[in-house]
Image (cartoon, rainbow, N blue to C red; front, top):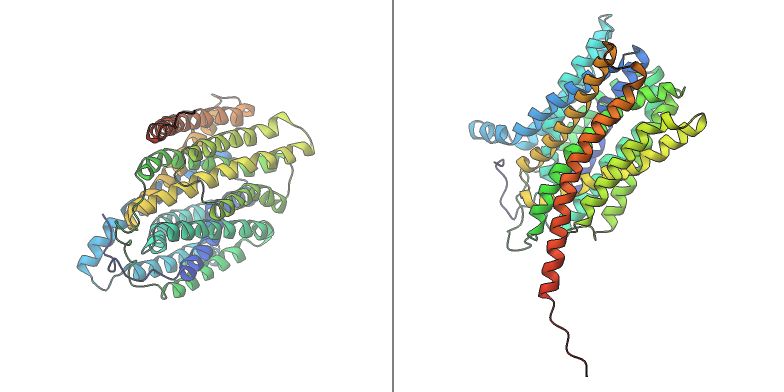
Length: 431
């Protein structure tokens, strides 16, 4: 189900406006979705079960926002014609800003406890689940083929680049100026709502299907990447909670830890830039195979680095392991969102499905981590074996799911090659 849209030939939303909203919104996402774990670990010395539990909360509240935004917008606009996607987007941005200011309000009341930050996440997460499908519908509306490939490629570089820049400045603020950081996030989100006023009231639909029809293989590729996308976020959600714990074991400062964690974000941005420049990966069945391999191998190496190396080599090996992991994340995400928007015809529902799969991965990963951490706290698992056991469980699930996706991709690749050989004209006999 899609939201009511402007006519199919309506002018696409300004790419500069959409990218500006994505850039500024991603700054807040980097702080709340990732930095809050580093903050809680430093400020309250929160144990692993608490951090994993908070991550589960983020995923569980993210999914409903992403999954139901499309149908909800249809019903609301049928009842209130003035309530357009642009209005909803601006309202969500304002509410995101207010949510990040919750710890500041609690501090004014002399309340400083972990539950305040949990409440902030519980408010912030479903709002971001609503935010991104609407932004993605404006990104893809009225664009298809080469224009959509260019737009989504730039979109990926912009939002991921914003997260890298945030990590470079977040470390010192997380350690010494947490409330200043949240105040800045609130101001950025509320200010971004003003930029949304430059969007059309609703995203235009795709150009007619017969103008630039997508290859039939794109639908099959979309199905494969819908297996890989939640898998990638399953391992990411586990890793972003584990990394602050690993940083502490390496005796790194908050600034050094934030920079180290930012390595995989930097690798993802580099991958996004390469895929935006080179479009040869479109329609290729080797893309999901390479993406899945880099993702799983990088994850295993990152979790194993602090255990198999000593001294400063642990830091360098962890950074080295995070590089292929970030590249795999970039490949899977870039392909998944492109095929979702190309096949999904600019509907908010297409972006909603894409984002809800991300939420599924963000929930399952830390849920497994929470179960293992609680087992360690109860003495069922030796405390020193927490990370290896978590790695084994998550990696096992990731390998199975990624293996299913890769097997499907391999079968499609062989079938495509056989079809191409059958269609090739026979060579003329030589004299």
